[in-house]
Length: 148
Image 1 (cartoon, one colour):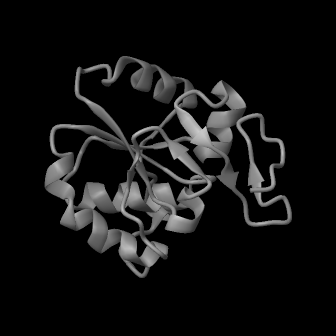
Image 2 (tube, one colour):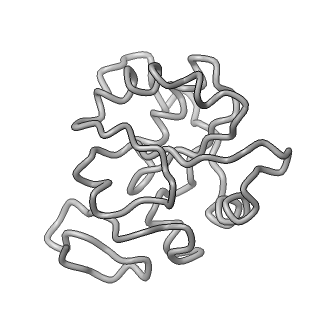
Image 3 (cartoon, one colour):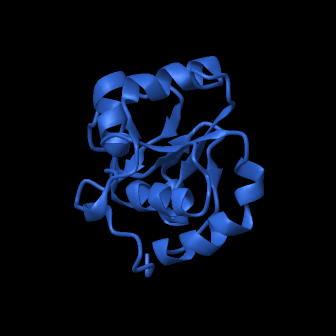
């Protein structure tokens, strides 16, 4: 991310369970009534394999572009609950910490990322597959390999 103040070992970003993510997306709002949006922290290539329906995607080519992209659009996220996500949770963790450091207090990461979401609730609200960084290439919502 090229942002040295982001150090998850000093404290994690708040995480919500996949079941809570599904519930909030089903409702269209969080438990306090704020609209919920999903924010993809992955690069455009990964997003091209699949994403949450209506997810915000800044079409970044590498994660180091995320800070400037999200700062440019922070005002659009005000008064909303943001659920950041990525494949396994590393980038969404850093992204959520960065956003909280810049004043957005209603941002959470999916605990365990897309993989955990698939494992717990399946593909609800997700379109396509999830790119993986190995010979499998992509996994469907049942975590079965899919060649894109």
